[in-house]
Length: 424
Image 1: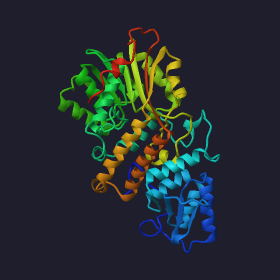
Image 2 (image 1 turned 90 degrees about the vertical axis):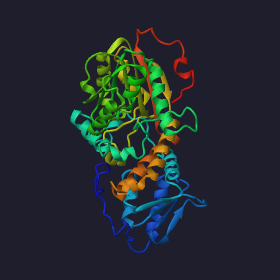
Image 3 (image 1 turned 120 degrees about the horizontal axis):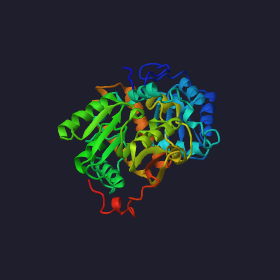
Image 4 (image 1 turned 30 degrees about the horizontal axis):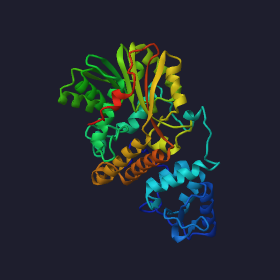
């Protein structure tokens, strides 16, 4: 079956299983494979072609192998590796031996040092490869593409609270459930939540943070989200947990937020906003946050402004873009805001994704009842790529705490949220 998350793969499938030997492997085929390795920066990688032809860097004995099953796949890789590797791996026309995460780390590091792929910071990076730039209508389509494929699917591999953002591992052996609770606690402590405050959350996912804030800290929360599947789950959980009177889940875009609040928080939404809309988001925060209010934005980020891969945008997250800290400042600089604290939790996100992938693999029998093998492989590639990108530092995870510039009712030190140690 085709599926809403990965779309329809516009490449020929060959014979059953997506493999077509394309006749005998020729000297030209091996030469082209060698050119691929060179274009990727000569990573410690072996390419094996249909019929057994193999190439690798002269004098090396790599333990990671990419198997290409037919000539068409080889040519597609040459034309546009950033798109067609993902499609052909998903379709089973490319196999990886030696570990998919290790393969991606090796290739990403090599590409980052290669002129063909190395990119300088680009102020227009957000617009590269983007078919839809998060207008009110476009944002709904983009979110529906990834988040509304079924709560039952996400329930298989997320934590009990259904959090699809970076966890906080206060100890190396913490469970995913405990780490996600610790993440919510860290955010609440940074914000200094007090009973009776009003909170606006922009992009609430399945609603766990809003319920945690209301249930543990006695605040009132308005949480906005444009994913119908997530909002439905969030409302059901709020009712079951007895906090529906203090949490209102609103199925609407962040740009429609009205009213006033003491606290503004957004976790994992900024990646779907785009720099073209950062000043618009800043305006929303400015008109809602009280004079003594504080806010926190957690987002995937990067050190240099570079576009996401065309495969990632087409198959997984259309409209997405992880900002640099410089780009994020557009939210604050034209308004009366001061950045109070910036923390980077990059390795926490790598560990979070590792646990997601482990749980995903453990539940493949259930996933197969919902989706086809192309979907299964695409999501394995997506989660593996996330781990690799966070491990090598291509992606970051920023928590940015901010307030009005005239707000002096602030903690003197970080002790408020560092001591005592965070516990679930």
